[in-house]
Length: 261
Image (cartoon, rainbow, N blue to C red):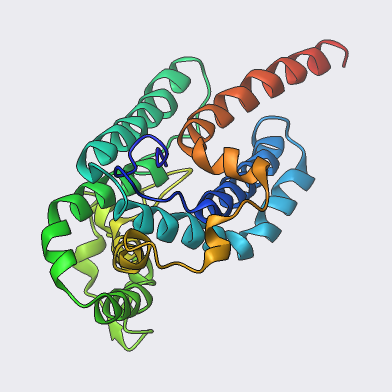
């Protein structure tokens, strides 16, 4: 996200990362479209398709986050980039949790969605970059990958692939929901807790050493799908705009249908 405007001087653009990120954001938009067909239009098949596609969610989430982590190693200012993305996340929360309910649209509130999570990850990586650059990239990536996998079920009170059960008191309130600890009362239409996703982002930051050195395979620098490159380059704006555009289209259609029923 915002990778194009924040590349370090002299850094070669890795077009494959744009393409992967573009594919991931398009998958996310399509997935949300089916949800909106159910949520806005009341089409049950929309919910059915949305739920069926949920099995693929972790794959495009992971692709999106790890490529963002790699790009943090190429950024002139990961902290500045992170502040912009986090501000975008706050804007999404403002619209969905404050403005939309005032319009009578409830149930679509977003607290700590993908933008909020990525923003904090970018800020963290930017502040920790001097330390990250001193660490062995292979060991760092392996440790972060292990931490990601071993904390993946934190929202289900499990660690280390289910070997450790976390205490209930961590899940009695929503104070720590950005970290992944929340009660049954918590709801967010889009939610990415820092644990485990920050570990995947940091794994990408360690892998980014090869990107910073210009030592990715040569095919990664070549163009394969310009449409995906564009989508990846502007993924931040696509994410911000896609839901308002869908609502702006679907709600008038729903109103027109109701007038003729």
